[in-house]
Image 1 (tube, rainbow, N blue to C red):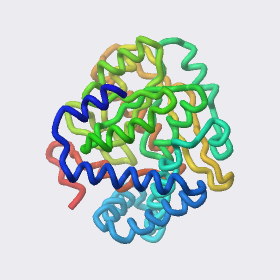
Image 2 (image 1 turned 180 degrees about the horizontal axis):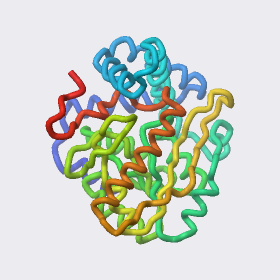
Image 3 (image 1 turned 120 degrees about the vertical axis):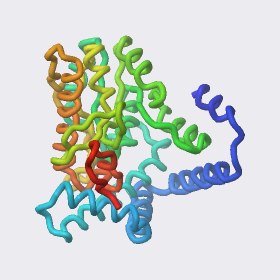
Length: 314
């Protein structure tokens, strides 16, 4: 975290950034004082308000759902999107409470499913790449894993406000997690795999060539980060899906680890990169289809188009 603080000092911080950071700290501190149920209720309320006032994001979400689920009615797609805003609100409430969570308290509302898959992959000693995305409570997933004695590294994009970036990362890393920023992606991942460590990668956002390749996502070509496939093929690390999703029937989060994925290795690197990126994306899609109201539909996932294709967003 010392490097994070040093990075904050590289340039002068604006008054706006200071106010944003102060506001965030006040919100996190205030909501964090509430009982967990109340914190989640506040988050859900903020999510409901966001649904009403953030028309642009609402429009993006409905457009995405129209492409992904053309057979669903408009009412069904709207219900899914309302669930997304509620899920994001819940996650906000959980984030505000995270600093006070212990392994004992968190285990009352979070459980593992498939931890044996993770442990088997880790035991191979070549490192573990956890394939994940903006589904469920992704901020809480790695935090809980570290609480339970399995710290990991997280590949993330730097936040525009360096003070906020430092504050958020400090919470993420309270129990041994580390941050790998995307501008140090390849070197950081290869170093971690060489050490036999675990790295979680959110691999469900829009990219641009050459960092991304086009593979199907819900039947629509999506420009997708190919770095995970490159690192996995070079390092021999295990790749397995991991998502923390809300199970309404249990009223609990479940951290699900799937079985290690069987990577394609034909010997043609360019082909293998595309095919494995398609495999990873199809794996994420399968989870999203199971929990559609918990994925970040408000992100313009299909923004980058293959050459010659028209834009999908207005």
